[in-house]
Length: 232
Length: 272
Image (cartoon, rainbow over all chains, first blue to last red; front, side):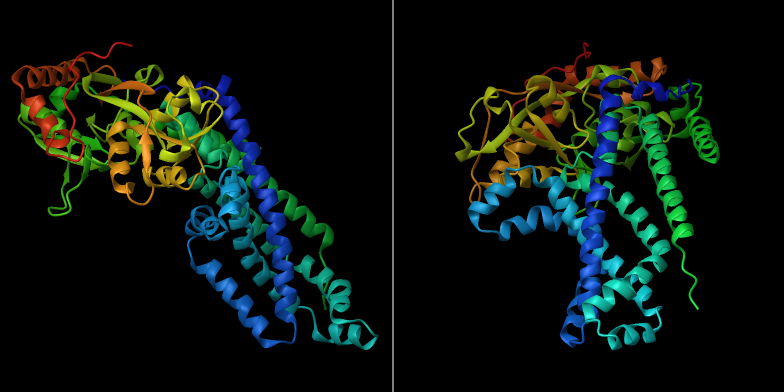
């Protein structure tokens, strides 16, 4: 007896709702973690470039930790481990306040920051050093030179690798399922376990993930075309 | 649209893979000389790895073995993930599932269930100092469960106001209740009894007396395999009447085990 492939069976009623909620959570988690990762990534890059050696080692250590420890482990550490280190009252508060989303965002954001800061660093290194020297010589401070001259250019150069990081981050949000965040993969497995329509449920999720990945790529390619710098 | 084409190709591929037709399971298994049984392999005491022999053993495994013996064929075990159970069966990679398969109406539309060979009482574990003693007190609270389990579905059904948070494995779901991230953990009473015992010293727990629901488990077979299903049911009925079923039960759940349970169900047809 053949199997009838019937995607409609998982796209009705509460199952459709679950997919929609899962998708919304995935998008929210991606955006929140991206903003956090970008902010911390930029800060780390600036700190690293300060003329004080120990800062560089510190950032390098940060990058190596996030690059070499499996992301799933990092997420579990943030969810089950870090709150245990807090003072009791604060820990109880965190534990009873639906901390999954927040801690998943922190874990994903910090991990992304490690990759983003590496991308930014290579972007900055591609800006001729003479520009920094010129900026300093007309009286800019380090921060001013960085934020008015170097970073605006470097950020544009690193658009393609940043798109890559965004795609990775978007897909990695599915790991948040391990700590009970109701994102798309979590909901997909929920639909699957209710209906046992495994092929349909995962086919729907695959198409959604593909569609959004393509959208991110298209958006990134557009931004890259519009902002491209002609460096000599 | 390139995207549409990719999606369509993917769907076509899936339908092609899925559309396996089988003639007669019973004859096929006999001709092949082995019964391939899908089981979880990580669910003590149903199917788990014996630390000494490295073999997968357990209550589920013994049930499959009895079916294989009745056919005079060898037993081949195939460990699988929870979400892979049904696809593996539908694609014909396994002949039968003995994999903690709780009966639900929607699931019964996909596969056939044998007579129930186990009845699982689903209960809720809470912190001893939480003051929760009834299921009603869990309304509006957060309850953890194993992802993909029927416990999760049971909580939704019985305590609709409770929020379920599901985890990949029982230990995470348990840790969540120990750390106070959720107020209760719903699972088979068996697992809860064992976890409570383990955590006695560090984190005293208690189990809410009333069960959330009682769930019959069956062996899973593909739909439309009447002869094979009849054979499986015949084996189970004979195990029940000969007292063999009781012995297998006692081996895994009886007084000599950490569970110390008494057999209080009969092997019978699952009535929706």
